[in-house]
Length: 324
Image (cartoon, rainbow, N blue to C red; front, side, top):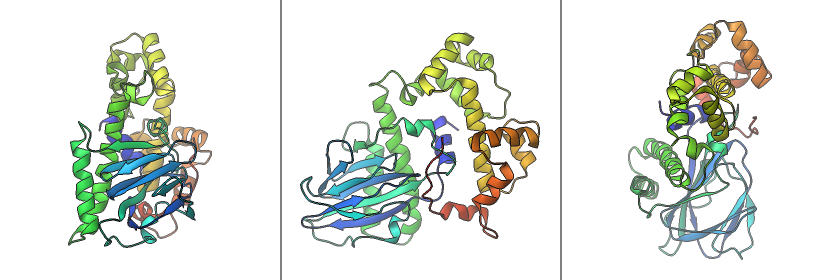
């Protein structure tokens, strides 16, 4: 897997939730913070304003996509001057639609929802994102994202046979294309962070190697060789861009992968240890407890209720704050 695909497969939990909402007249809605989720807004028809808690209002029109990577509270309104009413918003948004989407052409229609994140923590790749990621799908280079938005709008406004299967798949594509678009644009604006790291040939080669083979006995020297750099310059460059030294990131990623396997599979601890590069269950347990402050077995038991199949975990909504 490439790094972005791998990160999304591990940090995501459950299916994305969404609700098609029609807004008419003068309106403003206050959405509460949702720790542990990446919110999104897609303007299907009309226009509106998104007002972040600590930033300038963002004017949105049909075709615009907004990601809220850190689950912060915000207001969605027809105008910044309209006083809002409070409303929670999160992974279960589809359970409480505000209105039906069969309104007049003068109304504003948005697709609102969230991607639930795994409880063990947010990947630093997502931590690098700003509070609001605003993408204009009419811009050059965003044809794929525009296509996904058009397909989402068509499936949402005119449900047909198979729509319940199509929308979650399209929402997964929306997240991927939106993140790809942001990283492509951000790499020209900053010299540090993941946007730059994924375009840096040496650091990207090391990241891909770690993600492709987390169980391999990597060392700073072997990763530096892949990067085409000597040991010290590689370690310095990696730490500057990623925010952690190479071996710390490797250990963190191994534990994050182990947590996913504990949460989503019934694989024995010995198999999980082997999959993430530890020679024994004991060695894995020591490293896992150091990162999560709980043994692997207890973590697995707390992740599922008795009798619940592992794949049903993906349907749970979580409001737990993310741990580092």
